[in-house]
Amino acid sequence: MPTAREALLDAALAALAGLPWSAVRMVDVAAAAGVSRQTLYNEFGSKEGLARALVRREADAYLQGVEAVLAEPAPPARNLAAVAEWTVAEAGTRPLLRALLTGCWGERLPTPRPARTGARASVVPAQRRADAGVPSPADLLGLARDRAATALGPDDGLLSGSCEVVLRLALSYVVAPEPAATDAQWAPPESWRPTMPTITSVIETIFRVDTTSPRKIMP
Image (cartoon, rainbow, N blue to C red; front, side, top):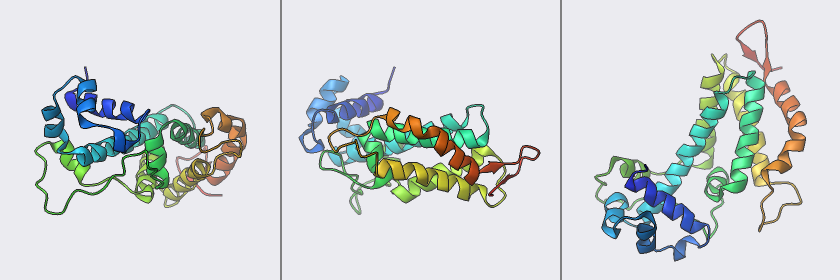
């Protein structure tokens, strides 16, 4: 059973599916989560605090997803291709994640404004972390790159760079999806799948695995 905090975040995210953030009301979020409005304010402090927590959770969920994909039993190059594919697919259906990865925050989304200077720190540890700020697109890419490099084995000095190239390849498709996509309807995740054999080949070139050694080397 989700905690009150998770229920409130789920309710806020669900509200965003039909309303711009400016029209989402705290009282409605509390009611949808089945808790009092006071509980909501105790957890997040304000609507801005709720926005920061919502975006922080999305960033954390993305990094956890990267780790889960990398944990699958597969050759490193295939795992990196899977991370790229998964990133594009998730960004296509999760507007908050797309904004985190690209830095493009539309009017409908809760822009993660920093906490006020001098404001009293929240008594809720998770909220203090959210109030500390969310990663920029470059920071998020770097965190994902580091997780990929750690998951794939000892770094010989080139592994991190290879992981970053692959992630930037995925990010380029998030920023500029296929021409058939429109602003109203993002490219469906399946739209990338026909290109995966080619993308995988490129990734295997970027990140060649010496099958007789655990070392990963650039070509």
